[in-house]
Amino acid sequence: MSDLSFRYARQADATAIVDLIERAYRSPDTAGAWTSEAHLLTGPRTSLEEISGLISREDTRFVVADREGRIAGCCLVQGLSPEGVASADGKSAYEDSFGIPGHRGMNPARPVNAAYFGMFAIDPGGHGGGLGKIMIAEAEKRVRELWAANQMVMTVINLRTALIEWYQRRGYRLTGATLPFPFSDTTGETTRDFHLVEMRKDLA
Ligand SMILES: CC(C)(COP(=O)(O)OP(=O)(O)OC[C@H]1O[C@@H](n2cnc3c(N)ncnc32)[C@H](O)[C@@H]1OP(=O)(O)O)[C@@H](O)C(=O)NCCC(=O)NCCS
Image (cartoon, rainbow, N blue to C red; front, side, top):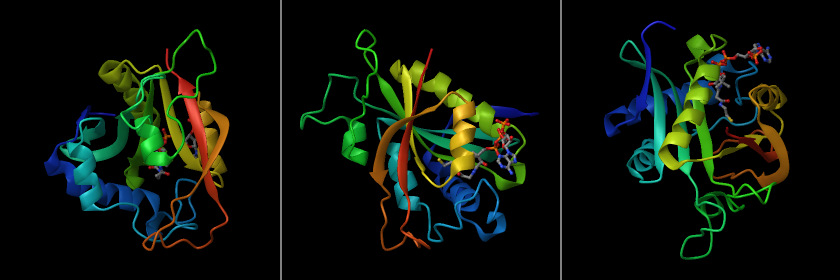
């Protein structure tokens, strides 16, 4: 892991982030690998417009892993409304974005202040090299610093069992909550027989 550093993305990084996400998630080059969703979805995963918008939002950050001036990995983190602190329309940010409540407290003595984790991508040339594990630990550290988050929440396609197990080995648990996959004209799905499952981890 020589010359590896982490920073927040700037607008100038948007094109490189789009390129990395497209190559990591659905590229024909990695199809068939446990890391790929190309067997389920063939359309674009994101767009320059979406990534630029997320970089400029107040409540989101892209954490990027920089290796010798090149982006080797990225993930999105988003601060959500703490339990009991809803926005003007009565919904948390996660609820706004994904339609399910941002807080899912298990312990009433410990109010939940969750952060969302997504758009996690490691350069396919480096898959299996350990950067994913380092990157998710860095994201967990940063959401604690940024928003005093005490929980991380994400959604994963239910059929990606190897990925779900990878997150479970990092301390994430399936909450039992499910939500529909957001199919659209550009998703390019090969089947509609899947959905998203929610995973959460309490942060120290
Ligand atoms: C998922 C992803 C972020 C992991 O990053 P990575 O740098 O490749 O992961 P690491 O090198 O840290 O870990 C490699 C893991 O792969 C596991 N692995 C290797 N070959 C495997 C296989 N054939 N099947 C299942 N797991 C395998 C290893 O056991 C290791 O996990 P462990 O340390 O818990 O045992 C990365 O592969 C990626 O960018 N995938 C595409 C985008 C994506 O799916 N993002 C997540 C969407 S929710």
